View 1 (spheres, rainbow, N blue to C red):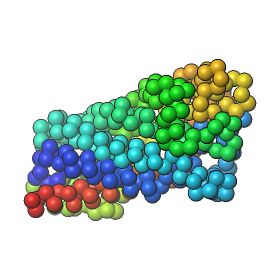
View 2 (view 1 turned 135 degrees about the vertical axis):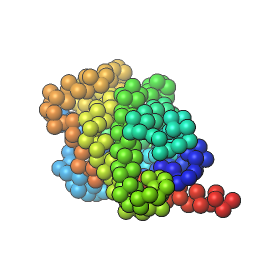
View 3 (view 1 turned 90 degrees about the vertical axis):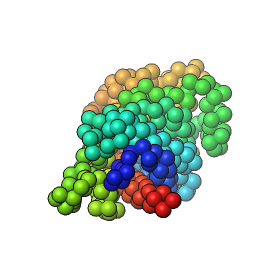
Length: 327
């Protein structure tokens, strides 16, 4: 992800800017599908304060009918903030790591280097953004069926969480989240390796540095690479992602009939004590297929999202590169 004949370190801030723009564009385009995915993942088949949806289409129509456009865009502001910050930081940290391993020569990087660089970037981004994603998830899960006072917005959600649960609540799911950096690591490694193959296929034999010549690729190529890498990462890490989402959002009083409250009950005891508890209950109530619930909406949202992210990122980065060269 660097230009031909350009040292990797020269593009650190351009990479971050392009990543932030890509993150914003992705969320703005596909947020309703993310709301559906989140609700599917936290509905474990028992009595719930969330409606039961038959499929993705039914979910979208039901939310639109009962909650309006506001329901489809629940948690939009923290999602935009989180995605913009996350992708900006991710590409910045990722390319900083690649610079260290390659010493400025991108063609020396192996799949192992890409994997480690992406994992490192993912871990740092998780530390910075976990509170934002927790706010987004809780806002997305609010429905008319809730028995507790709903959050009125991002600020109210943050204030209420701090008052009722303390600062530590903002980092619920951090442990599983750090392990989940494998998703991004796999995605970026697959993207980089497929990109190398495609550049090699399109490049002219004997042309110097053809494996890093971005002029050979177009938006369709970037979209295909982004989608392919996302599918590979999702198939391998989706079950763990679902468990993490349960642990972040499922905090229920045992005496309450609905097991998926966003906030703890009066006794302050969460329904799920840790991720292993989530795994056991998922197998018990739904079987192993329970780990893949919501994957259809996840694929519908995240595959095109990955395409949009990398198309916008690569094109914005190329624009910034040309602007710097003119300077």
